[in-house]
Every structure is written in C-alpha cells, then in structure tokens.
Image 1 (cartoon, helix red, strand yellow):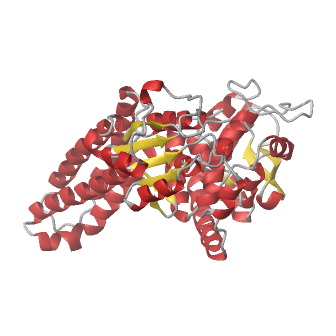
Image 2 (cartoon, rainbow, N blue to C red):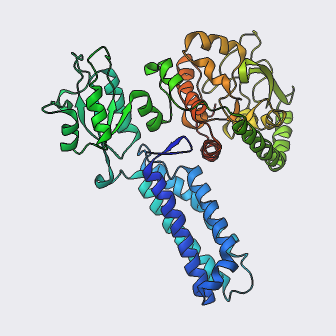
Image 3 (tube, rainbow, N blue to C red):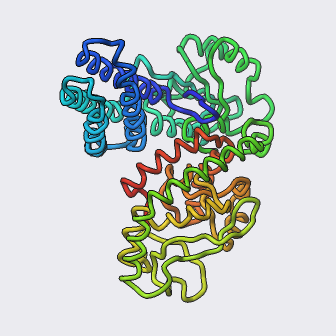
Length: 460
C-alpha cells in the first residue's frame, strides 16, 4: 500500500493506472506522428486531444472499478464492466480524435487505431482486475498474535488483498488458546528479527488480543522496523487495508495521539470552493433530468414534489434536507421514523427508479450551495436515529465533526444499511474519512460514486 495525501492506494492499482496512462499517451503520439510524418509536430497539434482522452479514460476506468485489486468479482462481472467501459470509451475516442485539426491527412486512421488500442487495453485491464497478483510481487506478511484479533486480520487480508501472502501467525506469550488454525502457527526458534529475515517477511501486523505486561517484545519489534521490515498495529492495518477504522479494536488514545483529523482553515476553504464549483456545474447539467423526474413524480401520485426532513449536520446542528419524493405520502403515518428496507412497499414505481439511479438525491445540491452539506462526507442522519446510535455505538458523534455529504466514503464502500449493526459498519468507513479527508479522497469518492450510480449498487 502507498499513502497518497493521507489515503492508502494499492501498489498494483497505482502501477496499473500509470501503465495505462503511459500506454495511451504513447500509442496516441505514435499514431499521430506516423500520420504527420513528424514527431515534433505531433505534440503541439494533438497534445491537447491526447491528454484529454487519457484523462477521460482514467476517470471511466476508475469509476467502473477496473482498478480494484480484490478478486471477489466473477469473470462475468469483470467482462460486463469492460463492455460498459468500451461502450463509453470507443465513441469517446472516435469523437475526440475526430476533432483533430485539418493538418492531418487521414483522421479515420488515427481514430480507428486509438479505438483498437483502447479496446485491447480495457480487455487487458478487465483480466488483470480479476486475476490474482503474481507471486513474485506479493507482500509477505507475518501476523503477531494467534487470538480472535489475529484471525480477523488474516481473514481480512485474504479477502481484501490478493497480493498479500500470509507466512503464518506467531502466538504472543500470554495467548493460551489460539483461534487460528494450528498448522499456520509459527514456532519462535530464534529472535523475532532473525526469524522475519529468514522467512523473507515484508510486514508484521501486531494483532495481540492480550496486551498485558510482557506480551509484546517492543525491542525486537523495533529491531525489525530498523532492519527494514514494516511493523503495523492493528488499527493501522485495517485503516490501510480496508479503508476503515474498526471500532471493535479501537482505543481513544490511538485517535488522540495518531495523525489525521486535520480540520484547518485552508482545508475547509478549499473544500468549500470545490463544493460550490462542482455543485453549480452539476445543477446545470442535471437540470433536465430533475425536470423529467419532477414530471413523472407528479403524474404518478398526488402530493408534494419534494420530501423534506430534519437531519443532523456538522457539530450536531440540525438542518432541513430536500429530496425528490420517492415514497407514498403516508409512508410514516404513525409518526414513527423507520429505516428504508429492501423491497420497501412504501416506495412508489417512479421512486424505485429514481432511488436506484440516485436521482432523488439531486435536490441536495442546493443544500451544498447553502452550506448545510458538502458534496462528500458522512451521510446526514435523522435526529431520532442519531440519538439512538450515539448511545449504542462508540465514537459515533465523531462523524459530525465535518459537514455531511451527498455521497461519502461509506456510501461507495458499504451497501445501504437499515439496522444498528449496519450503521456501525458504515461508521468505520466514516471515521476513516473524517480522519483522512483531503481533496484527493473527495475526488476518489466522486469517481467511485459514478460507478455506484451506473451499477445501482446499494440502492433501496
């Protein structure tokens, strides 16, 4: 994992992005230079077109999930993603390179060359996104601990990081009843640094369930770190591997003395300018879509066009949120707040469509312009649920230290939740965002949101 602007990115994903961008730039420049007969003229005449297309392809591939490293998707799903990208990328390549100046003898040869090259690149990327990492590039990880916490770490690595190679578990001195398989437990026959060197360990994750005096060999762990082996504590492991902060292993001291939670004036100002610019552009672009949605809502059923609710925002302040109405007007006729559920019978026919495509969320752009919300942040919850969740879930109030968002890290990482347990899972992603939020992470969330909208993932 590589940390870029406080956000952890898989090395494999970063290598894929750099390779794809470099290959697209190279193929385009070669095709243009061959057509002109001169490389010196290619850059000034077609440089803008080439760079614009490379940037568009990066956004399309990222939004579609082709750079995801986890191999949980089926081959069919990977191919479906590739076909969806091709449907967008091929016409885009044809259009952009059709706008080249008249200096070129044959525009069509460049257009079809780029379309063929892009098709091959996308199909290759779809294959690599599904295939597991090559053994030579896998990270060898030793887990220090053999209890329940170590078991969770091992399962996390196997499911979330195909490039992780677990060499085994090393039980701590005070761990009497291991929770991990016995054949994966390592015997400490030498010092920890020498053992790590002999096994070729790249990283050690300290996942001790019991941390009483003498349970952690601090000096040996320090020697491992000095000799080049990375050493991570349990919370940092989940932060970098899953993009979440697990509250079941979390201590307040780790949050207090660790880095992150930078809410400076510069960061706040940059985020606000970014929100205003993006929300204004999105309001203009989505205006026809909002008009069509409003028309169909009115045609289907009588009642208000917009649904307004009180939500809890930054620092616990309440504000009124606006959404297109997607449920019947008597959805809560008993006056008791209810979470939406799968196949909720309160949702109208038009409501099913606009909720699946997230069109019902578009009026919240005006909340962004007013300053109640941000484009990216934890989703605002109703006061009734906030009171309940604050009492039942540790650290829940921390999510209110930033403005709530139209979309968020938890929304693109976890499906819609309708229980306290779901709220706890989503909080772990919200805490990651609150701790590490930057403009870079906001851009990552926005690109992944496009993929979520296109696939309808998590909609109810």
